[in-house]
Amino acid sequence: MKTTKIEQIGFGEQVYNHLKRMILSGELSFGEKIPEGKIATMFQVSRTPIREAIKKLSEYGLVETFPRSYSKVTSISAEQAKSIAELRTVLEKFALHLLIAKKGVDSTILDEMKELSDECISLIADEEQRGQAFMKDTEFHLKMIEATGNEYLYETYEKLDARIQLVRLNMSVTSETFISYINQHYEIINLIREKNEAKALTLIDKHIYKEFATIPYSL
Image 1: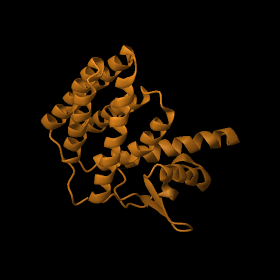
Image 2: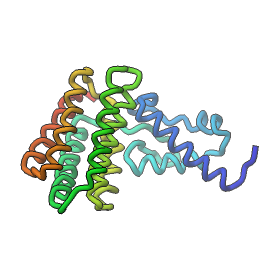
Image 3: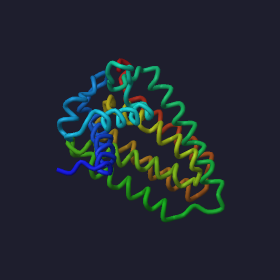
Image 4: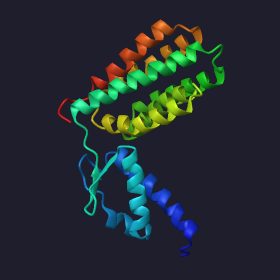
């Protein structure tokens, strides 16, 4: 097997994606130590790309590192989850304001948002696909933020989104409730098309609160 520098850089990205998937799927639990040795053996790499991946994950709030010791999956308290929901509300309401204030919103983007919602609903019924359903939900909100054209807003939201996904691992929600939650996506899309900012802002408040309400307070 080749061990060029380019491959080492490639491995670093692979390790990052693998660890992120392990965390957001719940395979690695809150507070669980990152198994650096096991990952190094799996990818047949040194600890260097492992630590680079962990550093990147820590920048997104998914991992806590302890210098010269170990790293673990971030634990999020109920109070922190509430703070995340509050900041998320501010960012998404600002995004809606920017979108609706524009002279015209690209209908292609709104169609893509609808398609993501359709895909999400089709996945919800299968418990084994619940993680994928959450990902489609996430993509919907990221697409809405991206549509504003404000790169700094997107960058800020993307970093927060990693924590949003971490919080979602504690959601206790039935398929029916999840579907009703995603159905609000269609309402949001229609309100953007209609440029009804007042109703859109009220709905996004309810939308985010509805998700937060499904999270136990004893995380």
